[in-house]
Image: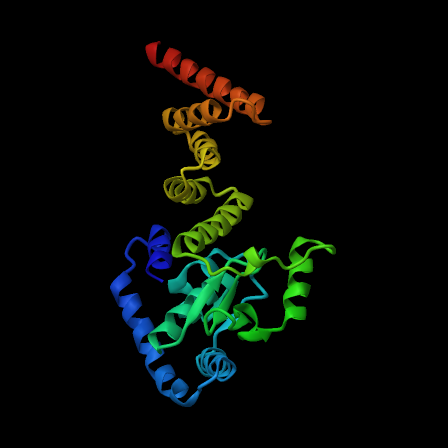
Amino acid sequence: ERAALLIARDAYPGLDIEAELARLDELAAPLARRIATAKTPLARAGALGTYVYDQLGFRGDEQSYYDPRNSYLNEVVARRAGIPITLAVLLIGLGRRAGMSVEGVSFPGHFLVRIGGEGGLFLDPFFRARVLSPEGLALLARKSMGASAKVLPEHLVPASPLIMAVRMLTNLKAIYESRHEHARALVVCDRLADLTGSPEQRRDRGVHALALGATAAGQADLEAYLSARPGAPDVERLRGLLAKAATTVSRSGSRGAN
């Protein structure tokens, strides 16, 4: 949850992370009492789901799924709505504070949580933490990966905080790029480049930098990508962007000289 709040602080510079963490402490306190008598993973899953969705009023935001606020934990807590991964962060944060074993699972296309450790139950955070049977997991796999998809062991491995942060940022990147919000997309790409070291993230950061007129930074990123991926299929397109940027700089320099 701290990583999620650090991501949110890029969009909300005044965000008080310690205050947000204290708010989660407050929300979790009644849950600890509720699960004291819940001895099995199924009973604990029921107690967690009832408290978070029925008592606190959280829900999956089906109406405005791609609202970027659904990707920022502070907004999820304030609005009581989110997408699978941010609701998973909430379940993990509250569950662990209450003494439960709750882990994130980076299932393809739809983030899940596991309760009870290895051999435990898989819950869907977007739909009221309902327990997913093997058949339910298989259906979810087919929805996200195609009719012939099967659930593989690697789909159900607990996700590290790094994997979760990268997935949250990737969601935000897609949202801001679809809206052509280059400044916000650039900040997200910057985080992704730092976390992953991926030349592709540097490439995308460079494209957004050029769109914003930050020519030197954009050129540096695109040149780094071309050096790392000389045979990539987008090489010619990127060389075209670099040539266009160089021409623009040259023209600006000529006007300044006059």
